Image 1 (cartoon, one colour):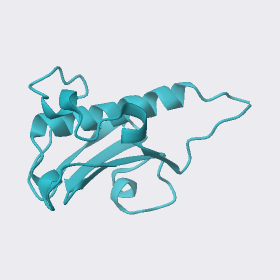
Image 2 (cartoon, rainbow, N blue to C red; image 1 turned 45 degrees about the vertical axis):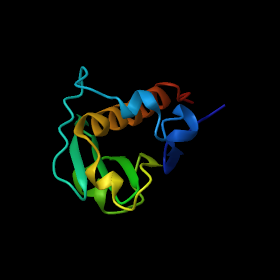
Image 3 (tube, rainbow, N blue to C red; image 1 turned 45 degrees about the horizontal axis):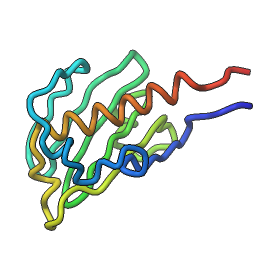
Length: 127
């Protein structure tokens, strides 16, 4: 059986049930092994590199957040067909809640999405 990650789209709340989950909502300063550093508001963003060919971009605005992983930084925001992984979810009840998401929550959501990507990547059967 062969699995592929190309153009993978995951609604992370379906897997982790994190939509307004109390554990996520109460996120405090936790260990941040990936050194994710969110910045700004409306949108809250974070970007970085997992490896030489794996860049990520996190964005939270309005009532939604997303994380994209692609081979280059440009591909993470360009909507190209080179996207390796895309996770997204809904956050908040008011129109702009995600744009004002706390940095600790952004770190937790991005970390969960990246962990999901890494687990999915390690489960690929090579043919």
